[in-house]
Image 1: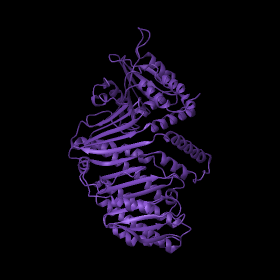
Image 2: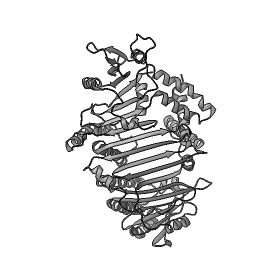
Image 3: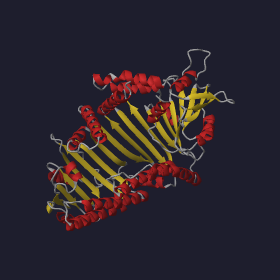
Image 4: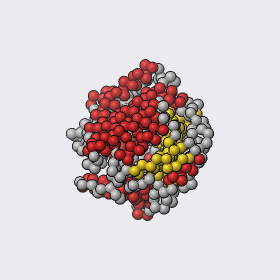
Length: 587
């Protein structure tokens, strides 16, 4: 094994992922993850493995021994800190580890840890001018190198690894300046959580923001450079995928540049075996992020009065502004989707030339309606989904729109866009909602066939400001009943609320996967088998406990989110960990 595995394990603790940071100047974001330590990690792993079968629990000894090997020389009772360094390419992690006192009173506190590093293929050579500093060198022929420093007064060691020799002088200064890992983390230390992470921008001026923005550029370029066109991918599909990732980088960039603080916590209650993820975020005043947060929860929610359906596997409410950046990116996505869909239509062998022309026009009209909705700068959404004993869903959904009555003339064109498509207009009304029924021919849209079923009725309800959609057994009655429950819009602090159950969705995915092709290559076949095994574990885990709740709210300019998971999620995690151990860690 390599020390990379040890660094990789610590990197798993960094729920912020691979985010660029700089070796740290005042204007740079401080990105930190704090974990209670290896003893806590092992207790958490044992806790979730205890929820699994006896056969799966046998992997505990294997996991414990593996972690014990990784933490030789490390005091498992004290916290581990990881700072993500940006501004260096490739990105590096600055890691503080609590050192175990040597059994030999005359020994150096870092001896066991250094011996462990050597066992993993990394030699440490003491600096001639500083007895607490060591140069790390990887095995011959590898570019791995770095620094390790001992802080004997607090019994911690700190190390950083890189593959770029040019960064070594910079990283040396970072290590030499590093002090007590717990002095500036009062907000993370005070929370009794399984793990905490935070992004803090202490320097808030426009100049500081500009420097952070500039520092993000190389990371964006490096990330986008890794996105390559696949052999069987069309130009339109590649552009859609590339630009979508670029848009996610826009979101990340704004958080790193304009956020004042972002904190996230993960917690596992070892008594109840329930878990949660929470976060809070506050923006620097005067930024676009602050403007976006100020818009949250200012418009009334049209669906606030609609109760969750009995037995609903998903009850979702969204009342969210779409700021200028997101409007621009969303419209770009819609344009790319149209190009991708048009390529698919052109390649279709079951459509005539006239049908292709009509299908493209129908698609354009729908996407124009979508773009107009985006330009309103606001989305109000509700979804209810109830599964029956046959794993079929009745779904009722509604979304805000503008001049949505255009659908009354757009939808009939669908019948001309493909043989076997049918459209019945004005099949029902409920209040001011006009309801139409459509049915797509098999194969016209494969995704619709797989998700909703072949030749299933889809009901579309239309008003000037909203579009309704319903499908599944009893869909029309459910749609009308839900519309009748809509009361006066209500302004609340809730931006997103979702609650549901995971088992029905796993069963539905399993049913859909049964119709998927096996794959042509050995790799594709193995990937399908792996997905099948993962779904089987999930179904077994969620049989008795599968509830999930997600809430995002805003109060006094602070966005707060909380996701809670019932025992089944931890049981699934335990099964997945056991499988990983069996497949990767057994000798």
